[in-house]
Image (tube, rainbow, N blue to C red; front, side, top):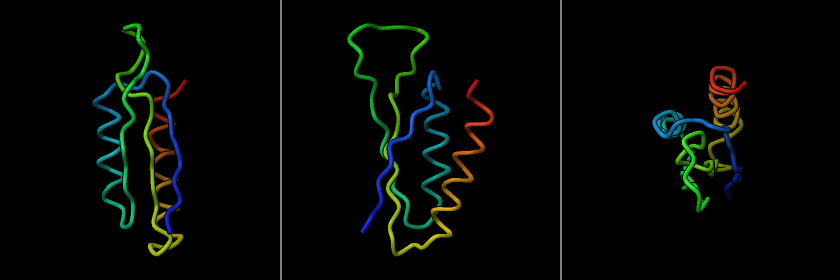
Length: 81
């Protein structure tokens, strides 16, 4: 069984979303899917990515979930206002 969580970083550039996803994918039992922006209006202040789905396998244990939370906390502290 997997837990699935949607994570959004308002205004985060595409390159940084990809960096976060690559970092998370290094954790055992974690899968990441980037969600494309669905707004019909182009806006330079919006990211090309609306968010990401993060799935953590229950077999990977609490250490993997804890590591995911540490990674997300790091990026939140660096890139959110």
